[in-house]
Structure formats: C-alpha cells, structure tokens
Length: 365
Ligand code: ZN
Ligand code: ZN
Image 1 (cartoon, rainbow, N blue to C red):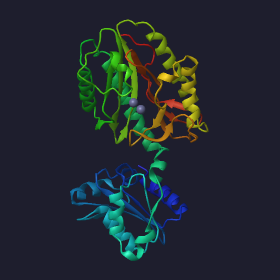
Image 2: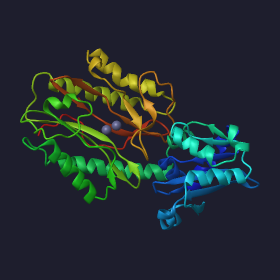
Image 3: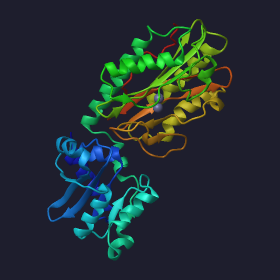
C-alpha cells in the first residue's frame, strides 16, 4: 500500500494551506494515511527539518493491532484521549497552526482539542481546513483500484448467484439474509450498508430496506447492496422481474436502462459531475419520467459508501482519472412500481470502465 505517498500528498496540501501541522481523526482518513483500522486513532503530521513526521496516537486496546497495521509512522499508546495527546504533542513541537477537518469534528471534539493545549497557543492554533484527506481519497491509487475491483467483482458474483434463488413467496428479509450470508461466506468483512430489497409496490421506494413483505408472483424486485472487502465498499443495484411484465413496466425499464447507459458512456476525465447527471436525467426528461427520478445520479465510493464526488445536477466538479463513482438513475412511481440500475464506474485515462458488469438487460425470473 502507498501509505507514505498518501501522507506526502496530504502534507503538501496542508502546507499549501499554510499549516505547520495536520491532525486527522476520521477513521477512514486514518486508515487511508496509515493502514490502521482501529476505531480510535489520531494521526498527527508535523513539519520538521527533513520534510515532515507522522505519528499515530491510539489507546491500549490497539497496541498489537497498531504495531502490525500502521506503516511508516511512530505509534504512541495513550491512556487518555488520543486526539488530546496528539494536540499536546503538537504544542510541545512548537506548532502554531494545525489544520483539522471541520466536516468530521464535533463541537465537543474541537473543545477537547483546545483543552489539551495551553491558553498561550489555544487561540488560533486549530484551523478548519475542511475535508482535506477525504478530498485526496476521491482519486484512488493503484492499490485502491485493485481493492475496488475485487469488491465489485464479489458483488457481481453474489448478484448472479441470487438469480437462482429469487422466487415469489420469499420474504424480502429472507432474500437479504441469504445474500448477506453468502457474502460473509465469500469473505465480505461487512455489507457496505443495509441491504435494500424492494419488491412489488415497495419497489417504488428508492431506499426500501428489506421487510417481511413477500416477493410477488408478478412485479419488480430491486436489489441494492454492497460488500466490504479489504476495507473498500462495493455498491450495485439490479432490478429483475418476477413473472411477465405488466402494463408500462417494460417501457419504463428500458428508459431507465437507456438513461443509465447514457450516463456511463458520458464518464470521462474532464467531464463535470453535472454533465454525467444530465446525461441520465435528459433521457428520462425526454420520456416524461424525470419527475419520478427523485435523487442524484451517483456518488463516489471507496473506504466509505458515500464519498465525493457527488454526481448530481449542476455539480461543477470535474472528473479525473482514478475516481470511482456510481451511476444509479431510477424511476419511482408511487403505489405502482419503481426500479433502479446501478454500476460502479472507474474513471480511466480515456473514459469510464464499468467494474460491475453483471447483465442489465430486462431479466424475467
Ligand atoms: Zn446502491
Ligand atoms: Zn449507490
């Protein structure tokens, strides 16, 4: 893993923001910079004569784990607060301006940071530099892309296996339980989020978590799920049909598929997130369905299920090579039916590569 290179990048950005230190507490950011996966860890980066130093502060529960996982950083085991210890250490190192992520730090967290340093430096020491590390995480390096590929491939394999399992009369819960059981047996560390199984009229709920409702003889079943593998999240949605199509269903499916395909085709470096969103939305608009498409087209995905960039209307953020995003338009017609199709797409040097190639054509079971 390229932890050293990642820390170097984070340090360069912090320096660019005129910081002489950076304190990182958000667990996915800590993992990204050091490899440490514990729930309580603070990374402090501080400038020195030869570039910068990185120290990981954690507590006694993680002595062995931090020693094994954290790469290229000094580990300090602290009895009290890890973040407090980090801040006191930074003060002792003579730091005057220390960046922190205001999007991940609670009011209480910031108060604890301030309390850990003396009154002399407290004022002005902590500067909100925003989601500095999360921003770096938007562009995946080679190791991360390999991990994302593996997670996405496992997702596809699980979905394809479920096609032989789905049938009328099963509860949505049984479907979710079966899928999650198989995922764990195949090595998934966790699911990326609560598995969505939305069948029949419930398919009109964009975030229909599995319930005790039974799969119908005739109607859609939407499966939206992800597995965590090697720390990285997959995310995919397929909508299949039990029994033969009823009025309008086939047509709407085809428009959603066309919208999804158009947005995937639009993905390329230099294109804005808003343009990708519009590629999907305009297909649905042309067919009078945009009012039923009630969410954004996609999101970045990686160590967390929802990361930057947001693929939404008017988003001006430009896609760059190495970003990994979802493309997931849907149409939800209340009390009738709904459907969504979602892929994970890697932004390559010339376009987009779909990491979830499971079949998207109308599937009748
Ligand atoms: Zn999803
Ligand atoms: Zn998603």
